[in-house]
Amino acid sequence: MRNRINRREFFSDTAKSVSGLYLGINLTGFSMQEEYMFAPNDLMKEVMKYRKIDAHAHVFFTDDSPETQISFADRLGIEKLVISRPMAPGSEGLPEEFINCNDLIIKSVSRYPDRFIGQPTINPAFPKESMEELKRCLDHGMVGLKLYNHVKLSDPLFYPFIEKFIDLKMIILMHMGIGKSRVEYDPREPANVSTPEDFVIAAERYPEAMFQLAHLGGGGDWLDACKAVRPYPNIYVDVSGSNNEADIISFAMEQLGEDRIFFGCDNSFYQGVGHMLAADLTEVQREKIFFRNYNDILRKAGRHVD
Image (cartoon, rainbow, N blue to C red; front, side, top):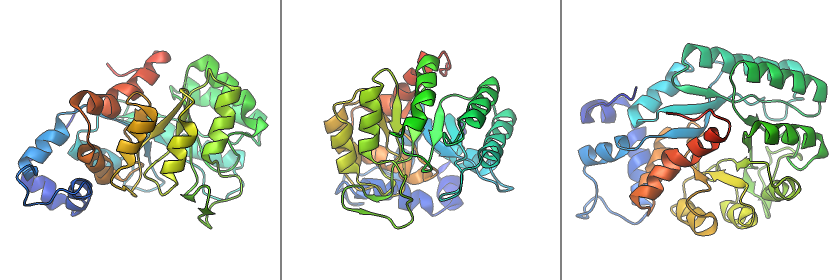
């Protein structure tokens, strides 16, 4: 159940409410003095009126998670969070590591089944162990697949897993490299990080599969990403991340249309909601991106939200 809070509670809870929601609106060129600027109470009414599925969320190995994520979601009217726990960047991605990550998701979903949708993670470099782990996670009710930067999405190691998820009618969420994909990589990224071109290779080989290109607002080359995946209707994008340039969503709309974009935060909750409200969208488009588009993906496997 969504938790509605008053203005004082919202703005006293954290300064991020201002830096996220107001930043998103200011990036469009609005000023606080202009007559069409939302007042705080009006802004919170706008925030809370939309049903929301966060299509890219995480929990952590800390004592205050997952309760912290639910607390943020409550303040912003996020009904469901699709959670995963990726392996550490640059790790070997051994079976014991991805099993441990998935154990955290199973535990979190079992505690909050009405709020979380779990996604497993695996490493196809260990095919036998990964297939066994997928069976275990699916038996626990997980939906979809979350991949990080241990193996490129276009690598043949992924082919059996992509084929499995075609049969399951579930989406595969893959991390996109941080930095400029065609210009300069962030030095933290390993050689196997996926770029938009890897999504294109996988989508061409498997047009029946569904792929989610992660975090357009995550610091990657979102212009290149949208243009690269435009011809492939089986590639969707989520707009999560903390690097929210003003026209990410409008550019994604122009290139991909309103049916291939998912709302997500990647745990940057205020930024995620803020740049959705700042975007020049119709009511129907906001409803689709906030909720309906991802729910339609869940519907394909019979796992949609009522």
